[in-house]
Image (cartoon, rainbow, N blue to C red):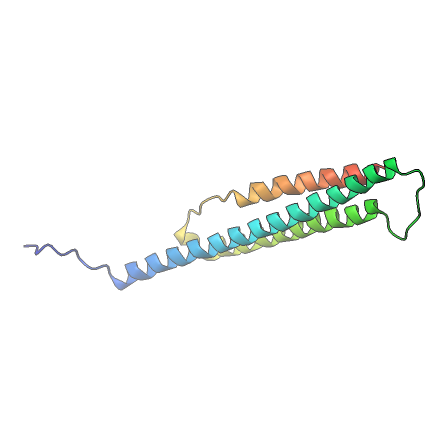
Length: 138
């Protein structure tokens, strides 16, 4: 005879549930960290490209060109390179940590796929393209 109360989960079931939730939170934190790197890299890449284009347009309107220690092109290349390099290292670290978690906790899989990795790859590709375009342009 049931009295209307549900059976309480065993301590093993509670431990499994808590572990699954902890894994979900940890993976979500990894995703947020990678997306923060994507935002930072996007800012560096776009700001570097903007500096280059702004001073290129300014130089086209000037009659005299002064020689400085660094040119806007070099500053733009450094910023774009920092954005792409930082994002590459962050992506490698993300994959390493995710693989470590998935290997250690295989029995709690399958793990969901995050859109963070394809977004990071796309921004990296666009950053490399921007770097090459600025580098080849005199």
